[in-house]
Amino acid sequence: MIIIHDSFVCKPGQASKAAKLMKEVMAQNPHLVNIMTDLTGQYHRMIMVTKYDNLAAWEKAQEAYMNPSEEIKQQTAKLSSFQDMYTTGRREIFKTW
Image 1 (cartoon, rainbow, N blue to C red):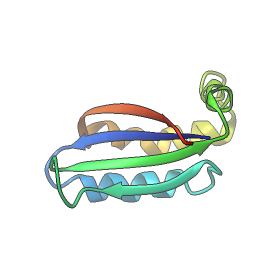
Image 2: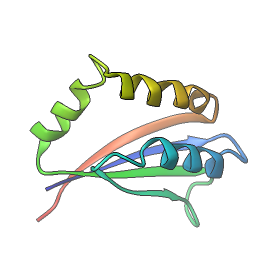
Image 3: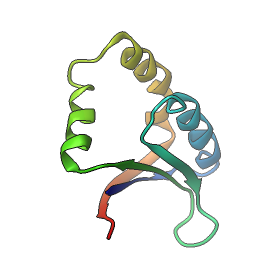
Image 4: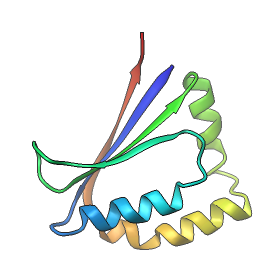
């Protein structure tokens, strides 16, 4: 099992907005586990947690964005304002035992 954390450091006042937008756009994604915002640690963070059976499954899901379906194009359009909500981000991939 692979757990992925996509973490974004948002502009002040934007983390909750980013979380709401991401939750709406990712609502139908079967890999989505949680959308979280920080309570402690670095300020203004939004973290999206997804789960996959293995890295190959994650890579296959990423390939869908290279040749987007109409649904993915609509998701991308909804996320156009997301770029303005954060300053930086990172991805962490964990293997569960």
